[in-house]
Image 1 (cartoon, one colour):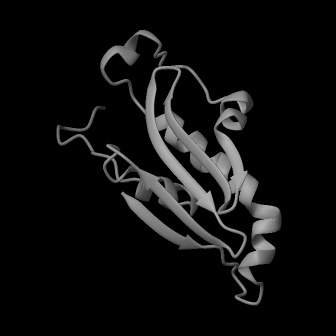
Image 2 (cartoon, rainbow, N blue to C red; image 1 turned 30 degrees about the horizontal axis):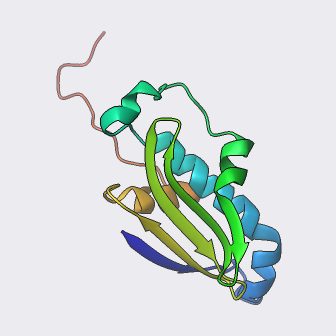
Length: 129
């Protein structure tokens, strides 16, 4: 899945470039943490997978780079989790979020960042007293 975004604020009077200055790093970390949390093992990576494991700053920094296209996170397998996530934030405020083999997870992460809740199944049985 590939999602193209642009940094904007609620007042629409701030340039996306200005938002990148203070928001890019936190936005990247939040997306990386959501990707890590939702990722599951694939194949032999199950040996390294621990369900209670958390993303560390070291994990984040290892995947972080800066180049001609901007600030970028690129993950494949991290401690047994098949993350397969790439996020690039360009200096002009454009963002590209790409995932492989993750279904629509990226859309769910963006919803969570906006405070939206995922729907959850409700028991169809009789209510417990």
